[in-house]
Image (cartoon, rainbow over the protein chains, first blue to last red):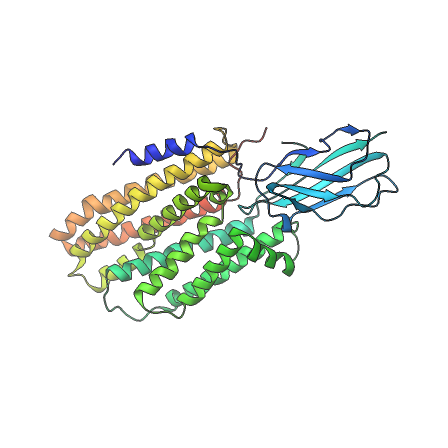
Length: 119
Length: 285
């Protein structure tokens, strides 16, 4: 009987998943800090934990002529990812993406990253 | 992890989290005690009558503050975002359910419905924190463990206040009452420790063994407070309860003092939990 909590704890460790406690950006497409030859039509941000897409905000700042980005949408079948469509063609230059997300366990986090379009 | 990131503690959320958890624990413990120890007591005090409404208000305020935080942390929370969180997230639905149970507890007087309502209000808080970040069967298991942990905490700490009041009202029944509560508390402590250890194992596993400094410090404070709480409870169970059979008046004086100490330590533990809920367990490199 006394071994039950210990066994349960060991079992919990044994079936450990990849979940984190707060949602941070794990990776993005285009990659963080990358230089891409072709302007992307959309951005995909993948976080370390499922996020509440309806409460997440992603903004994109770009060079003159950049038409901006649409709202963040949940990626189909992936609760950890957000997709942001760019409005119109993205001209060459440096883009800064700012994200603010709220994870399914209530925590709000924010951050930013950049990528460059250079044909 | 990529790019630059920022996070910070919102102390308003810590305060309202403390109030929500504390009130839910008190209400469940009181309902459980009243169910197990049915006795015609005095009319409810104004403080006791206000507790369910305070729980409802705290839960809704918690939700609004989370919406404010999601919006950037300044100004009033946007109504549309608050509604989105309330209906579209597990923690939002749980806080609305807790608030609804709180409001229902303000009008329901029967013991068993009060026990169910307060139990739902307390167990639902498992969704409002780190226990909610799992997925699939593992996520459900983690939520169930946390719900069990919360209910056991409520059964132990929440029943202390009604016990102290009952000891004053009915001194003749004190020895039997203390024995009965002692057995309940012993079972509750066993569940609290077992489920708490399992929850901690989930946290350590998710952080891949690398617990962050701030989280670790708050966790050590919590565990030290729990150790002190257990020491006081042990004195109550194994020294004062037998004393009540020999010298009830003397024992009751000491029991009341020990209950006050347990309540103060319990409040400190809940405060530590409120802070822990805002911190990221994983060490960020």
